[in-house]
Image (cartoon, rainbow, N blue to C red; front, side, top):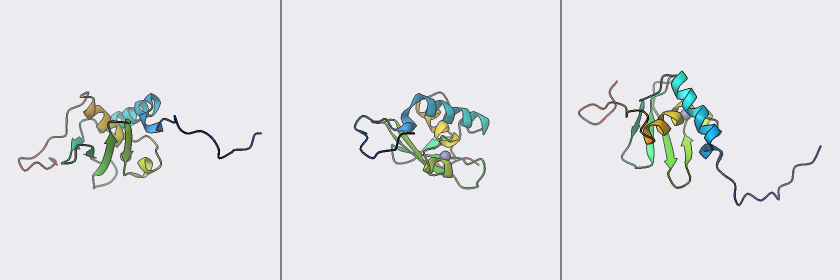
Length: 110
Ligand SMILES: [Zn+2]
């Protein structure tokens, strides 16, 4: 067994959340959890919100268009694990899913 070293070159490292495999899994989770069309844009162009299937509060998701990085505030997202919220946002960004319906005030329709 080789020992791990800390001198690896990360110069060209790709954010795992920007990889096709990560995105595919996130979208699969969005489908499984019924989160398609449950993401919406916020006032901030790179910030989104998505309904949580398990919690009454919405999660905030940050998407960086320059790198393709996706960061969700949920438990999985904190550990760069794919989650359905990120998947729902990716589907919204790529126009494969509609945005969550809004009320006349601009807030999410319950
Ligand atoms: Zn999430």
